[in-house]
Image (cartoon, rainbow, N blue to C red; front, side, top):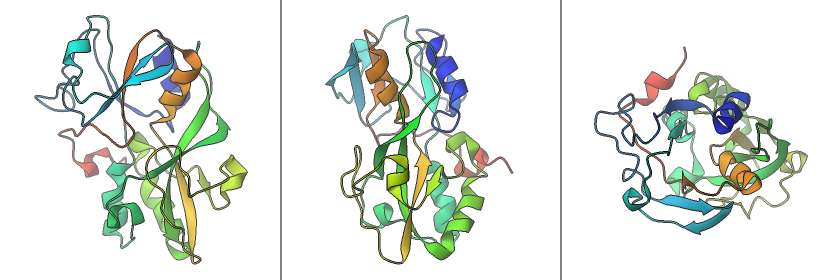
Length: 218
C-alpha cells in the first residue's frame, strides 16, 4: 500500500499510531468507542487531489474499501512543555498552531510525494534546548524539532502568513521552533491526486483514550 509506505519512509511528519482494517471505522487500540466517521471536529474530503468539502461527519461517505491511518499530533507533547514552564503563544491566545509548507522534500512512495509541513512555536532562546530534550521523548507525535531559527532556510518567507492554522508573533527574545506536522500528507495528496480520500481538517484532531505520558518513549 503506497500511503503506508509513505508514512514508513517519513516517520517524522507521519508517525503512525494505528492503521485500521479495510472498511472498519472503529479504532479499538486507541479507544473503546472511537468511530473515525464522527469523532473528529472537522474533516476534509478530497477528490482527484482537490479539496471539495469540510464536513463534521463522514458517515454518509464511508465505504467498505476505506482504510484509516491515525498519525500522531504535536499537540500531545504540549502538556509536557507547559509543565516544564514554557509558554505556548497559540495556547495562551486560544488559537490554532501555525503550520507552513517548507522546501524540505519528503521521501516518495508510489504517487505520494511533496513538501514537509511544519508547525511553529515561538520559544525563549533559553528554553529551546530543553524543548528539544522534552519533545525527543515523543517520537510517536513528531519528536524533536526539524528546524530552529531562520525560517527562510526551510523555504518559509513570511511567518505572519501560515499555510494552515493561525499566525502568532515571534518576539525579539524568541526563536521560531519548527516541528514536523501531520498535515504533510495533505500536501502529498495534492500531488498524488487520488480519486477519493478523507483527512482531518488542520488542527481538528482525533482525541483518543491514550494519555499524553503514554506516548513518551522514555
